Image (tube, rainbow, N blue to C red):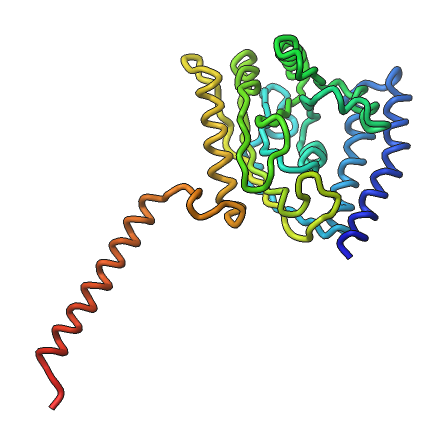
Length: 286
């Protein structure tokens, strides 16, 4: 049943993306990008997430949304930095966030029929990853312009999807943009690979945990590397909390307080056992 349910979801996406993308492209000369986002792109993305939930049985739970500015707040500059494990989160955050988002993504996605064409018309930041200097200049200039218009930028700090239980290399691009624009970074842990594994077209019924952390404000005296270390530390520790079975026991962070409590409890049990044996020796049965 899993392959059949998954096939139905992907078939729905493939069929419905055609009219959605066509409308976005055709209305580009007449309707501003934000309206096209709210009234065309976002409803389709919400439908895709709903189809995965209702047909593919992929539920989700979100915590930490109180860390986000309210919808009417257009002055807060925000960069979302989620863990990237599957395609699910690219749909989910666009459908869930209270502000229009500007994704930073590889330009190859623009060549996907209909879906990529629609993305090209929504004022997002597509980059050529082979031209690193030029890519960063584009992210910096467009990122600031889009944030000035009230958009939030979303960047996957690992750059690409990572396997469940694995940690990719965190790039400093988001931190560099934050320090250049004064934006805050919201770190996000997403355990999506448990239900939509990387490079898979079959959903695994279950619940995806999503956890948003408190915004990390750039320190003028710090460096992008130091800021990204904070983002990475929070995300990876939170991943081990929301998806503990994905990480081998030896890789989990050691909680010194719990370790000391366990040692103390063990010592107390041994002491109780010793007292019991001494008492039995002093009062032998007749």
